[in-house]
Amino acid sequence: MKISLAAVLLLLATSAALGYDGRTQGIIDQYKPGKLIRIADVGHLMGASERWCYREEAGTCAWSDIYLNVGKSQAEFEIGNAWNEDVDIAFTDRGTFRDGRYICETGDDWVPSVRATKRSDGSVIGGRELAALKAEILGLRDQDTQDCFDYLFVSADAANQTVTLKQRQYVDDTHDTSRDTEVTIHFDQATAEALTYRW
Image (cartoon, rainbow, N blue to C red):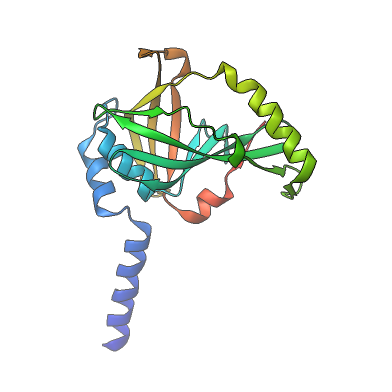
């Protein structure tokens, strides 16, 4: 009897570990494909997930977000991507929630937070090489606009512990359809950590 009880408890623990948390499951159950998601629900997905992978292809991302701190009015996150064929970068940025629908860029200077690694072996880049890279990035920032984003529900895959959304981008409050992007939200830590960036 003790063995059977232990087996049942192990099964329950395993199921809980593999399942979405209760609110995430509620969000999945609530939204149909193509339905706009309230930003409060998007915020929960940000905080509950391991990594957001944009334009995922065969375990690679065009870029990704890892949400570090999510509150009622804003979110802090690490963005990562391949800067060129030799270097990956990551930096910390912040977005504010607006109108119960959007997350909007703030215009904060995130360049000082830039970290860089070599794509070949993952070794850290520092010193003058990192300073030169930051200067190069800073030189391109005058092209930035302060955009907003909302999200449509696409699908959920319980077996792979993912949720897929469509991110829509607004430039000067106008939806730019050419920038619509599919994002796969990963809830499994091991799978999220195995993702890489493609160039």
